[in-house]
Image (cartoon, rainbow, N blue to C red; front, side, top):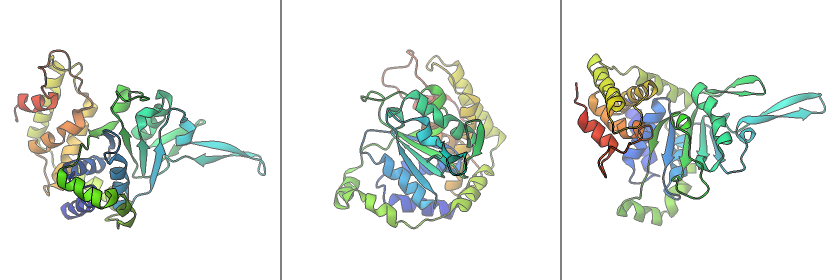
Length: 303
């Protein structure tokens, strides 16, 4: 399993240059059966990363450009009357795929954003009273611009919590940017990538990640992190049990990517920024300029 994950990472690195850690975080999120939120400035490669991951994993890919006039039916699908048979025929929307790229998700209205809630939580959608199961594996990769940009609608906490991880790409280093400029951004390479795995293989990887051993001592450390956020005045609200499960699942995936059959505190610390960064809201008690996630790591002793 370690070898195939390294092959996947290497393939994505050929297109997304100089972002090895972000690629590893994104793959850990997928192996943990989670949805990924990529937040950054326009033009930083968010869409390219999502498309590349789908191509490398051999999955069916759909992209929806979220705008203020997008309707829930544009994502989920709609029933159209068939005159010849005198019945309504359902036309599935782009959500019926393996990888749904919700591009600039915070440019849509809250009503349209909420259309994804059931799909992300249950792997199904209910339309006109009928529940339809989505293909498996299914996950959403959403991109969003910083909330201070014009024309954005902030995602509510309930929607943010559906995303297992949030990552940022940031500016490339000088060497990576030079290669991007030479290769016209690298997006043309995506279509030529040979898949490293297929949907059945990805499901096997996800199942293997779930079997990574988690000791009682590691669960003690995980619970100490959760409890610290709930009792510390630095945070508006503490981490939920769902956040605790997300930390465990991502730590297991990270350990598998590192070639181990057990998870360690270092694995939890590695995925902590991506898992809790969008769930923890700092209160007015924090020190100026202090990173709340880094403070969390330093404040909770390893069991």
